[in-house]
Length: 139
Image (cartoon, rainbow, N blue to C red; front, top):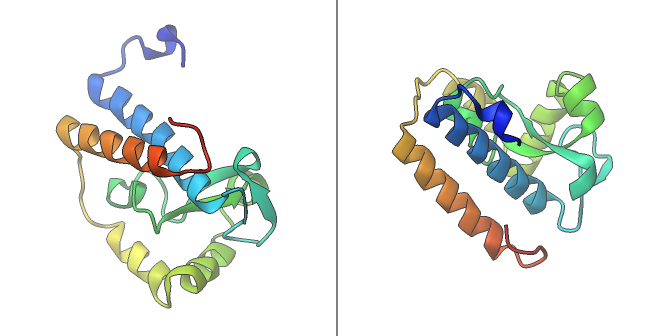
């Protein structure tokens, strides 16, 4: 990200963007080490060909950084098929157990506004988790 795109942004919004980048990298590495399958359609994917797809929309902070809510997804499902939510819900229940999709839908209604300190904690936590992933160079 260049400096001009940061002008006028609050410190909190910059931290959310930084955490989004780190968290997305963590999820894609977790699910594609070195290859994986799209949570929605099962298509083979790699780290470089997938997105960090959110089952519950990212606007809901209660689930935005929930590791079960976020999974590697092919770009077609994530960007052009509105997340392929039916396939995503089936994939969630297969991966994490029956009822996972329903629990995430319930959790989305929790009110959650993270402080800058909480964002800093999550940034450091996911940077550490990224560096522990042995198949990739340090973040």
